[in-house]
Image 1 (cartoon, rainbow, N blue to C red):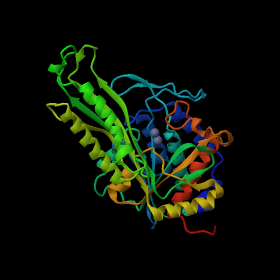
Image 2 (image 1 turned 90 degrees about the vertical axis):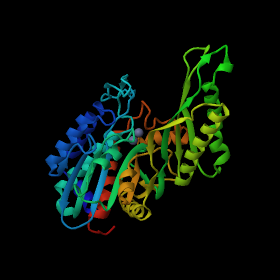
Image 3 (image 1 turned 135 degrees about the horizontal axis):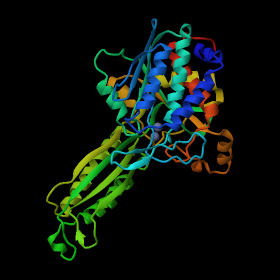
Length: 422
Ligand code: ZN
Ligand code: ZN
């Protein structure tokens, strides 16, 4: 047990009640990506109250908090703050009823259906323990509250806004995510732990005409249809079956009426890969196939490619993950485990470490009622448990709150605390 976990054990009895109240408040007041104004203010005020040196508005609504506490490593801890444009359907007494206008001006529900409210709560708890127990650790703490994870904008915006010499350079970056899995457990993975995710918009240019006179047209509907089918052959025919990859075309739009051949068509696709070479190969293959199909249709203009968003691979540093794993083993025993495979979700967390060339570790904390999870496992219905981004996603507050708080202090302590006997 490290000295921070000992400090947590001796914390004021009001701690968990305060954190639960904070969690419910954040849950009731979710904010869309890059609009986390209220959350950011709550966070900045709390951190200032704990004695951190707080810089708000780094990357729009991001908050950077520093505490120097003697000689030792610079440890960066990161939590994301944003919610999703979807209505909550959990039926919880503290469910969100918030609506907002999305980027297209459409009124949407807003909900913390990815659990970033839990991430903020864990971090505020960890920050409070660290601030009130300065004899338990040594070094420099950099606690970062990041906006816009769900749109892959936030980490990039913070890095762009970071500035030279404004903040110390971290030695290690740590982050965690709540997910479906038994509450009370944590899991981690050295190396690739989350996929890279890339979303593209592809515009295909034809020549519009009357539906009765196809000879006067270049039909973008045919191009889009041929491209849709042909793109599926990248994963099925060009990538080795042992190399996992996903290519999904989630949107295909063309035309307004049955007897008008439209001028253009738009495809929106998402791909997930687990290695940089495969990722690069798929990007090239998508361009090759789209350009060739447009040529085949005699299109007068090549297709236009726009990146909607791009998440890099989350690839945990091997040595640092070993250090976290060892600390988790001591703290959680059998409740800490190695994830059997990477997840096909994506995160922008690694942008910090990648941009600065710093090792990072990202791990997962279960949020499902353990009894519900055990039953689902027995009945082979684990896939039916509401996962992140489900309108029914709702972490069980206890012990998820305690576990994530302990996990963050345990991992941070592996760098900040003096070694203790196991
Ligand atoms: Zn999410
Ligand atoms: Zn998330």
